Amino acid sequence: MGMQATSKGNMPVVLLKEGGSETKGKEAQKNNIAAAKIIAEIVHTSLGPRGMDKMLVDSLGDVTITNDGATILKEIDVQHPAAKMLVEISKTTDNEVGDGTTSAVVLAGALLSQAESLIDQEVHPTIIVDGYRKAARKAKEYLEEIADSINANDKNILNKIAKTSMQTKLVRKDSDLLADIIVKSVLAVSEKTGETYDVDIDDIKVEKKAGGSIKDSMIIQGIVLDKEIVHGGMPRKITDAKIALINTALEISKTETDSKINISNPQQLKSFLDEENRMLKTMVDKVIGSGANVVLCQKGLDDMAQHYLAKAGIIAVRRIKESDLTKLAKATGARIVTNLDDLFEKDLGTAEVVEERKIEEDKWVFVEGCKHPKSVTLLLRAGSQRVVDEVERSVHDALMVVKDVIQKPQIVAGGGAPETFAATKLRGWSKSLEGREQLAAEKFADALEELPMALADNAGMDPIDTLTLLRSKQQKGEKWTGIDVMKAKIGNMKSSDIIEPLAVKLQIVSAAAEAACMILRIDDVIATQKSAGGPPGGEGGMPPGMGGMPPGMGGMPPGMGGMPDMGGMM
Image (cartoon, rainbow, N blue to C red; front, side, top):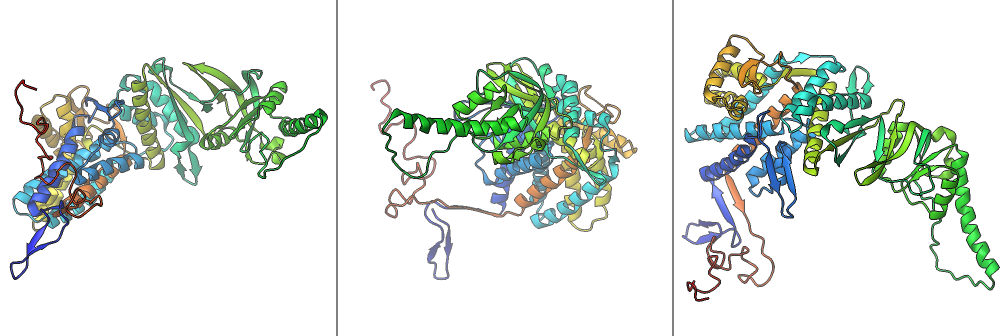
């Protein structure tokens, strides 16, 4: 069972614990490449505007319906170690640039399947890896060469970029409206430092609620809190709000030490309780004295304090998440106060209106109409929970691509045009390489073309015809020629307004090449079984379910229940 080797005296040497296994050489490579190809095939069909969605059901029966590569791979619990690497690149791409997760995985799968044919021709994996690395570097140069520089706050182009990102998703028909609010929100929170812009996507709070339709989604110049106003006697709406953000509890803390007080008459008890009320009233008076008419508190609010605040006509909300408090500070310009003695008028934030509104079943507090909010909220609506979840994922991708372009204002056309351009250039360049690396570089070009092939495939076009036509047009120097998936024909992608950030394309090539190279360098997979304690060779030393039998038997063939099947006698 374990890994064995024979020493000079023909004595077998057992290296691994019982239950460990090892696959070596070609077999290990084949196995890893096969696993990675399966992962790529899963997401292959969801690439592009004509891509299909996946329905994922987890162990609890929760359903996710999505087209987002990263989400698909995150939800399927992948066991195979090589396949896990592809899941990782989709995650990294998602965090780094937000879009292109499916493309990165498809490209990595294509690179590995191209490498497989070279390994079959006895080309050493190290040579393939070197060739791929050089080709990846070159491909990125060609992508930078084809890219156009733009003005970072050109709303028109940013709109097209957000729309392109949403073309492949469920929200396609509403992409005009969504692109508009997405671009507004990113521009609102972007900060200029010198010549460049910086955007922190966390400043855009995305709240989703099923009900209504996608068209009811909107941008709120401020923050939406999924809490309600604490006291029935408080006003439900205040215009021209002055907002105090408090990071301390408006309640009397209990004493730390245990002590007994002997009270002999009701008078003493009354003064004891009055003192507590007086302390709360002092706290509330400090708030009123600052001129605040809205109190947003991160911690608790005593019932008595609520009563005093309500009497003064102040709206209060309690137990607000710290992250929301920080966003509120950015939106309203308030300072978060930890000690009530420090609360002065200059610490208050402003908003045109603070109002409690009913959304579906819940009451939410809207803080909106802030002057120059550095934090805004996107309120997403859709007919059902599944749809609104997918809208949120699509909006995240679109927010990220707009951010990418603002931070690195260079764009390329989509539809497989830049990949085909880079592939065509790579083929010419590969001729300059000597030795077998030349083959690897050519294979890299073939793999890049897998992306337009997948687009054509999903659009029901003939992949081979499409690819040959694409190549011939690219050879003639029509660099923006790509696949117009919606019309199912080849055309100029620039004029179809299909535009993507250069940053996304570079990330796809880097991530895919690195993952492919990493998997190709593996020639030995050693798996060990952990023993679960107990006597050696007893239950402990065996992989679960095996019960001392060869794998696959699981102790007994299923359905036998320890007895021969007696055919209807049971």
